[in-house]
Image (tube, one colour):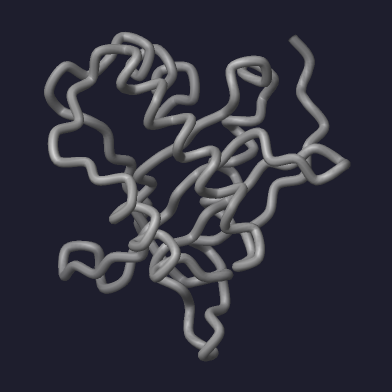
Length: 155
């Protein structure tokens, strides 16, 4: 398939509903695939995301801890998301980023959107001066799809 024409950008606070909608779809897909998510409280998740999500430059002039990168069609409908968290560790030389979630709606997969989201995550890391960007995923029962995806993107 050809690459999709989408706009990739850091979500702004007014786009919280698009962020929550895509994360809800990801959560449902994980459950449908048989992943057990014990203790996941959707209301708490929504509250935590709202509290921690910020634009790349936070409302107080400091970077937000939780960054959502959205893939949006020209008319503004979000079709993909990558969640990036700012962390700190000595081994990383200070601040670094962790890609915790990535989701693209099924009808948009295989069109290069995943790579575009990752490229923007790298750009955010560079703008923030991070020298490390990690990718997380479920250790137990790592899905075959996740493994294929990681190999395809050379992660």
